[in-house]
Length: 285
Image (tube, rainbow, N blue to C red; front, side, top):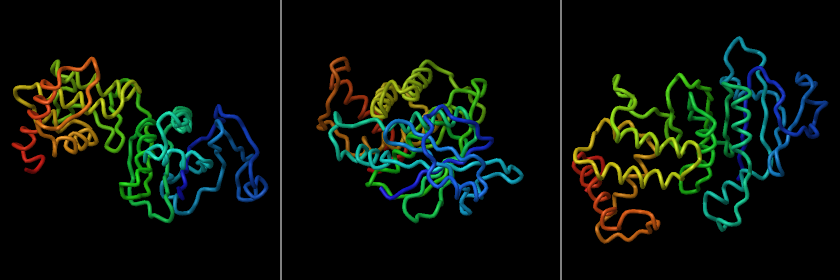
């Protein structure tokens, strides 16, 4: 993929990556970078210092001159593109370790800015207040050739535990469950279950597909579905649920793991939620 991933960091301190040869060190020093250092993690990513490009200067807060710019080079973007689009067998997928790079940089240099630029696409999208998992998933989602290729910037914001539980999403907002007009974040056993499912996804213990399946089952069991609760789900969850249910019918066949409920029960829950979504005009007939 013809794209570039850049990270702008304030108050840079050494990262716990292997140091490697800095290409063009002399020119970088002449450009004002003191002691330019390049890093490597694994075989597929090198992190090289660069002057802050003029078109990215708008993301650096005024009055803070000590920001630094690094470009991530290597095969990792091509590898992610191949994985996301299914151009390789699952058992042949190799980890790029990009998630480790993002996590470490976000933890050691909070409030950094990540910029993804495919080709000459203008940076029309800016996301704020995001975490490392969200950033990684958003970069992966940009690899999907079925979607419109867009450049974007993500302003990371480190959160303390006292600021609530936040649920990461592949393509939506970093949104707390149930934050509607002062409603309690967790109010019922049902909401607690939903929070638990999303937390498992955030911690890497289940896939986005498993999250969506569980959400459909839980909502489908409810006698009265809470619209506010549905509306407070991350956007990517709602979108994926709708995409699955829009053409779903009693004749639809799908695989269920051995420990799942019977297909008849599962289909009943799927159809119950679809019926509610139709009633609420959330999906069309």
